[in-house]
Image (cartoon, rainbow, N blue to C red; front, side, top):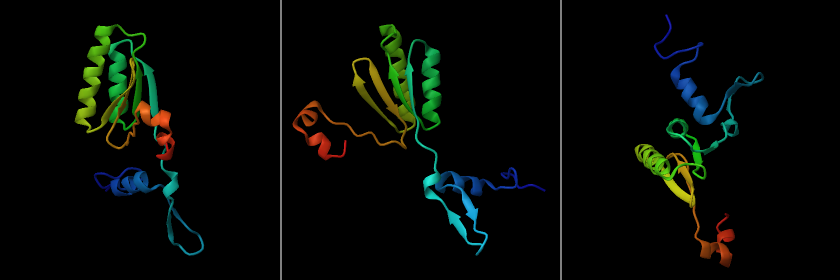
Length: 134
């Protein structure tokens, strides 16, 4: 009988370990287990132009999946922009993430697993921004 969380012969622990640390391979010579740390999936940034509340739902789903959302409100009605920003700020709050205003009509919404570093204009112009690795 199959374990409750097993699928395709792998336990949920094996799937979690693979997701966190990468694929586990058995070496033919020694039988030793090798874990490849560099095989993790790359972070994603979704860029979207918000025009409807459906776009807001898509951005929220992306945040829940662990992806950053760069939302441009250039073509959105001002009332819709306010509603979408409020909605996504609530999603980010629930996920313990961050929100950064990139431009007057562009916002970056990031889940908790993403660190967002910002700089101010003075740092950029006086060169200290490049010293921080930005």
